Picture 1 (spheres, one colour):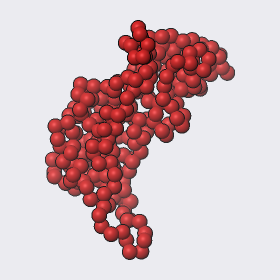
Picture 2 (picture 1 turned 180 degrees about the vertical axis):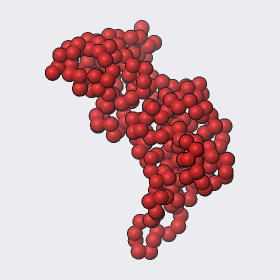
Picture 3 (picture 1 turned 90 degrees about the vertical axis):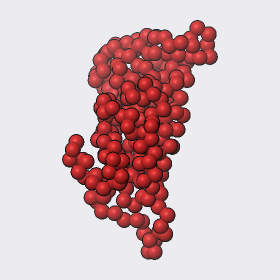
Picture 4 (picture 1 turned 90 degrees about the horizontal axis):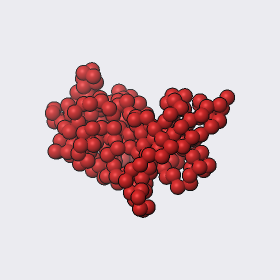
Length: 250
């Protein structure tokens, strides 16, 4: 039954309006809230019923597009997946950290995607396709090596939860490493060495301090820290051999 009263404290910022260029907090109260309502739905209510200038990103509203990543009560999450009953009746909402704020809850994602592009996040294979016209096959065991990291939706929740990224925005960040991992350990791909060389550079994988913020932040439950560890070990070994042994370490 919808009978809760919920107070939202939202961190806002609008560079286009004098006096609001710097971040400030604004409170909104909603009544008739059901415990199973989602935070995104409540932000919609605030925008549609109380303040149409509130700005946020969202698209599918089903945890697939990743566009509504934000900090909810100090934790990175997708607003479309967080239930009111899980965060209480006093809710703080902020933009994700480490990226420039454009307006309110909208951040500039270009630095994030620049890091993503830098790790060659695409399939590379220069061999002729199979003569029978079928796809390039691999064993289930080979697929299992990188299956977890195929689930990334590029929401930036892991990267913007990382203190190493906050301290140095040049660090490629967990999400880029996860994307590289997906191809590095794919036996059909032929550019693992190039990606490992990229991630071995100054602002690559070695800036990870294994703080472990990234894994709990992932809305797809990817074992981000484990994937980063596998990439580190592959660089030290000079190849992708032994990834199964890496998994045993964790």
